[in-house]
Amino acid sequence: MLWGVELSFLHRLAKHLKSQREVVRSKPEHFNRPDYNFRLDNPTGAEPQGEETVSISTRQRGAPLDLIVAEAMILANSTWGEWLAEHGVPGIYRSQASLAPGVKVRMGTRALPHAGLGVKSYAWSTSPLRRYTDLVNQWQIIACVRHGRTAALAAPFKPKDTELFSIISGFDAAYSAYNGFQAGIERYWTLKYLEQHGITELTATAFKDNLVRADDLPLVLPAMGAQGLPRGARVRVKLGAIDEITLDISGTVVERLDTAPEEAAELIEEENGEDGESDMAAGPISIAVDVDEPAADAAGALAAAA
Image (cartoon, rainbow, N blue to C red; front, side, top):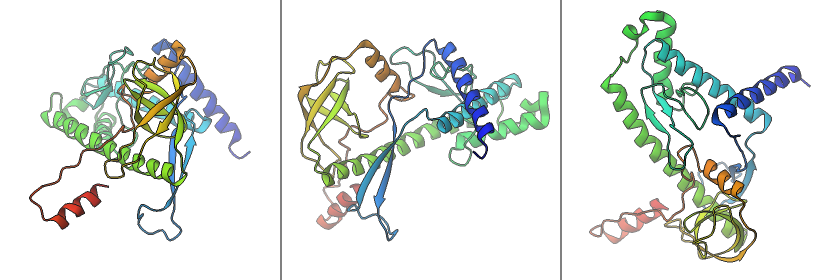
């Protein structure tokens, strides 16, 4: 196998790094919920019109190559974050005080521990082409490389720089908007998938209030009868009508499939995303229409919102 020896070494290293983080976390990391890939059958390559056949496949997190990349990024981001702190150079960090329920990840300029990852500090730095925060951190890192102990005087952003706080605030808003848009797009194509395949029932797992998460699809929805169920309880849900405008769908629990062990509830708590929340929209979305607009314009706004 080409590069087999090198890849084998990197995989062993990644597993070692992960085990070290799990010691700090005092609990293992779990990758029970997969990532989902969407594909539209569009041979012409034209802009999607909404009627394409949808395929949804899974990519199980924790696969060897996935683990190698993830651990390398965590190692780089934590190491560089500590390095910035050692030189007295501010950066943009993500931190989490503990793994207790409801404790969210925060962004700031101080190198604080990230309990969810099990590292002393974590500064996004490895993806400057897709995140502005990473680019800012790389500017600060370059200053450390070039100026060493005097980097704090030469870095683009100085300690307590108000512009750095402004960047964090702006990024938080943009990042939330992007995630919301992404969740809406994925929800739309998931609903199209249900419609195209005539799916009227699915198995799901209760995780919050009356919400359930589909076991085999990236779909969260409210289900009548799920209230009061323990977290992690598996149920069969009969689906209601789909509203493609608001991306709304609801269901009704028709059968309880098992009793949720405590371990399942803990896994769901941990898998609800870095901020302790579900990373999938549960619908419906909100649509604002100006009642004073001409009818044609209002119809156009609804079409664009879909």
